[in-house]
Length: 220
Ligand code: AMP
Image 1 (tube, rainbow, N blue to C red):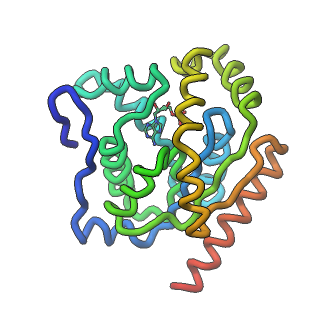
Image 2 (image 1 turned 180 degrees about the vertical axis):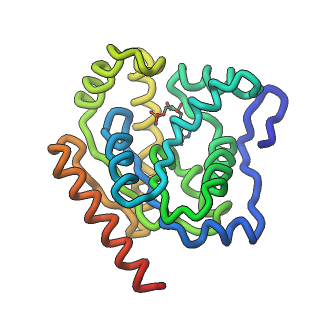
């Protein structure tokens, strides 16, 4: 991954035809929503059910931040503790590297991507295709804050701190609208209500994925 002098790349590296071809057949489901909207928990469950790979971008970045040998780890940590976004080029490279390392994956639930219209466009430029579908978790700000504050008591995440939570929400609201419009125009957006009972949310997500699978097998 190309790192330029104490900075993370804003521009992703291109993929050659052979690598793009590898990413042509797996089903790609983007799962987006605010922090605390419940997307991570449901992605994990969906990945088990469908035998897809759950790729949580925040988790991949936390792993990068932990690598003592990585020159980028401190920069990533600082960005995450500010509730800001890691530069799109770095995120795209991490995403495509991880997807390409996952041999023979039937599908991917990509959790927390894209955050912002630039990431949505970059994905299509680099990979050469859009996702098969985009699931968005709608959730009220109050619910998201309450859930994250509750999680903060477990101490599992350094960014579950009230000040950072508010910044993460601010980042989310600033960048998410154009992404929703973009996928709505492509008829790829499917909304789920993140405040409904868990079983209902899960069933709704499954019906979205089942529809994609049906369409996929017709094409095959
Ligand atoms: P999450 O685990 O999804 O709540 O993400 C935690 C943090 O990781 C975010 O606050 C961002 O700093 C960073 N992050 C996650 N996904 C992305 C993304 N797609 N682009 C840039 N930064 C991201």
